[in-house]
Length: 355
Image 1 (cartoon, one colour):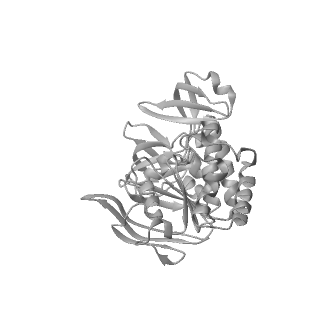
Image 2 (cartoon, rainbow, N blue to C red; image 1 turned 90 degrees about the vertical axis):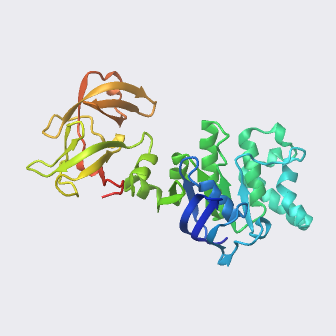
Image 3 (cartoon, rainbow, N blue to C red; image 1 turned 135 degrees about the horizontal axis):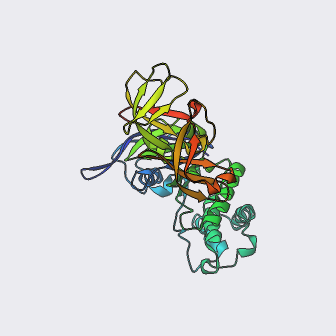
């Protein structure tokens, strides 16, 4: 396996820039997830690492070796695509062994490597089937097996679970994570699904508009988002935001642009009267208490999800969500008391940066 170093990478199509000075160091054996909305540049970056896209400026090194000018076949990486890209006329065994046969690897070695990969992925009973006789999840496992047998320096995953239903995605996430633990392989995984990013990654690279917004562990991005984009993108339901100003009189408070006063419980980390965005995650909204810091919110909608309940609430014109596992709120209506505890609050300046 190998480290991957990306230095000042830029990509443009004509006069249209797609990636802007991306710097990233991926450690040997690390599982890094590139996450962001469609069009943010994450797949383009992955394809540049693979050699499927040219580099406009900057440098990519794999195991310390510059690879900008190397063809994909010479970079010693394996890629798993969203579309599986299996040969329909070949059996599972032949699909998995194809790259080794092209390299004229000894038959005994091919048989051993393919058998080992098939055992890891639970494909042993399917080795004689062709892709049309496999389910979506089985095809994806074959595509992963084909990558594993090459024993490359790094694995690249380009939204490999997008074509699967929700239950199968959950199963395959667990299989990919277990596989990474077993192989200890350097892996880069692209997805727009923040749940996949949170559950799979050692580190997440959050991207938007071709710019890296934040790099860190899943919980670091969740607990201390660097800016409004990361705060809003990570988490489901998403973080609540309120525009307004902070005041530090006898009782610290935040006043929304709609003139709703929200007690803060502690002084805000900003200057008196500063215009900021206040954020709080739905699960951090406390649905109880009648003390001085309580507010009464109107219940607009109740969404049961099975594992919990999402409440759509409003304070005057300001709408927000709360999440609870307390089923007594299934029948909530009218107004209910809510509190915004100080430890659950996030503050962002006018440029959207964390304060």
